[in-house]
Length: 204
Image 1: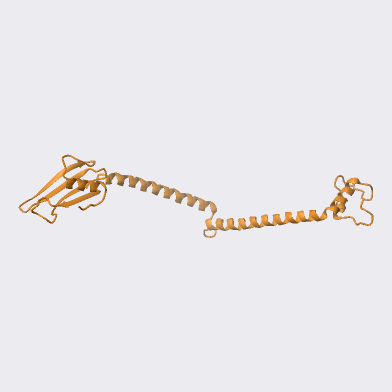
Image 2: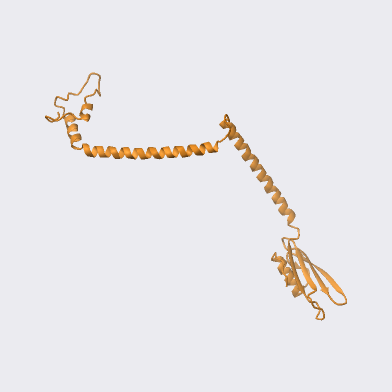
């Protein structure tokens, strides 16, 4: 029962609705301890309850706003991803995308195969060059003599040495296998081979 002279609250009036069986109604005018206790508790704590409900409502508003923002962002990305002329079927877009992806994969495999073949073909080619110039004789200046090493990727190739003199010139060829000469080398020849193995054109 509500205290004398105090109107019934909204929560108390809610208890007056049928909640169990048709035709059954709480007797608010009688001595109903549960209804009276709830009414008294609510009237004594209405302010904290309203504050809590307000806080919950604000949190829900923030959550709904975040969901709306996320939905708009994802919708924009989805439309950008599926941008196509009007009337285009989504399944056709997916099928076309898969076909293009497969074609790109096949082209990549073909390029890889060609790159491997090209790498194998370029292996024996002359790729390294080293050269030194020097004076073979004391009576001849200007560093007209030279040694030049022409090697492949593994250091196999040929070493050419030209000795220039006033009366004659001589050219010698020596084989190299993986950077090792098939005979003795002079200091100038060794410098040419070292420069070629380093993959740079050296001039001494």
